Length: 296
Image (cartoon, rainbow, N blue to C red; front, side):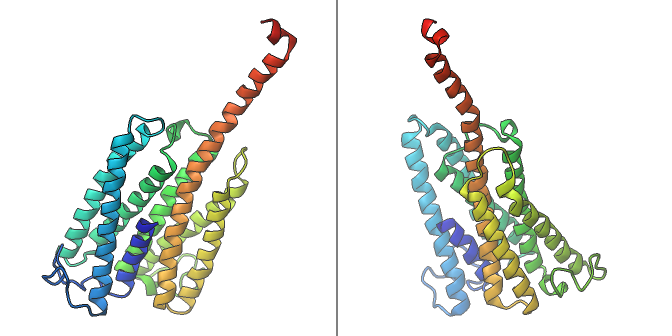
């Protein structure tokens, strides 16, 4: 939850133009640990404090996983925790580099991408690492993980649109400047690419509750509902010419959709394993109940 809030907070930093609220200092803020707090400084420094809290909690989780790594169900969590720690270190360094270089779009988007990956790994750590590789899962689970990847791409493209000042390039909704194939400046193409990926992702996510042979988990309906809400928010945001409040809601919902997709892919994999195991269990019960089974 706190990592989710950190990503949304990062979006608020960007949307309010507070990215240089602490100047180009890191880890200090304007050369101080407790800087005078105007609005931009408060937003940026608050974001850093939440990031420090996430780092502290990840360290605590790593210690717990290390202590319990030999217990049942914790070996996979421990291996996953190692990746989380590595990714967190990369995320911290990207945050520092982003500040030192005064917010170049490339490092800002990479910083966002690693944050999304960290959120996914922390969710898996909390839920329990998958029991088997995605390649051995059923088609529905593989599709769910593909949508997770698509969600990450859509979010990163959204970050790119914002950081390249391409948000106003496409007017109108759902088309871009009234066209399905808009021409013009490169910012239009960047923005339209983000929308096309988001539309394709939305179609896949809304279809999730009806895909697969096993019972659809609640997470599928959650992801679909959040996606519909995201479409509504995106439309209002564009038609009202990008007010800050709706842009923040857009970031919050986009991140929530991504998190729901990760939880759904994990849950669906578990259901598929249960679906495979259940017939075998029923077969054993049938053998015990049948005369042949009793004689045997």
